[in-house]
Length: 283
Image (tube, rainbow, N blue to C red; front, side, top):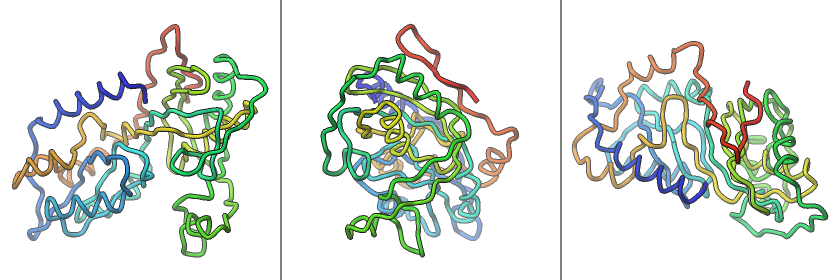
C-alpha cells in the first residue's frame, strides 16, 4: 500500500474507533455475534484471535478467512452462536490493497521468505500491465501456492513445503470482480482488487509475473474490507484494551444475520480511475 494511503487509513480507523457501539447480544451469559478486528502484521490469524480472547474474555469463537502473518487488515471474528455463520462470512466479497515487485520471486511468492532476483529482458509498460491484469478479471482457474493453509490429507500444505516436499495443488475456480492499478514504477506495482472466496493474492501476483515474463512477488498486503466490515471501522488490540468492560466492538447476532442475508450481495465499488491509474474489468 502507498504510504499516503496507509497513513490515511490509519487516521480514519483511529477516528472511527470512537463510534457509538451496540449493546452485547448475550444468551446464557455468552457473547454472540461478530467483531471487526484489525489484524496487524507479523502474527498468524489464530494467534491474533487468541490474544483478542484474552483481552475481552471470549469463550467460543473463531475467525472467517485466514490472513497470512505478513498481511494486515480486516479479520472477522465470529463469537458464540456467530461461529455458525463462518461459512456465510467466507462467501462475502473481499477487498485487498497490494504492492508487488516484478524483479524478484520466492517459494511463497511474497517477501516473507528468501527472495531470488529475476533477470527481466524487457520491463513491461503500464499499458502491458493493465492488459495482463484484465485476463484475471471474472471467473478464473487459480492454482494456490504450495505454501498455504489448504489442507491435503488433513494437513496444511505449508507443512510439506517446510519439509522440502512442496505439493502441487489443484487449480480451483475463483472470482475476481475488478482489479485497479493505482501506480507502477519499475519494479513495483500498487494495485487494489475485489474478489470472492478462496482467491490467493500471492498466486495472482505470481500469474501476473508469468504473463509479463517477469518475476512476481507480493511485498505488502492489506485486506481493507470483508463484506460490510471495513478496515477504517475495525478494532485494534489497543482500542479493545481501552474499551475495558464495554462492548461497543460487538456486532450483535441479529445484525450479523441481517447483513449477511442481504441479496444481491453488494460488490464493493472500484476506485474512481484518474489519469494515472486504471480499473480493468468490472464484473
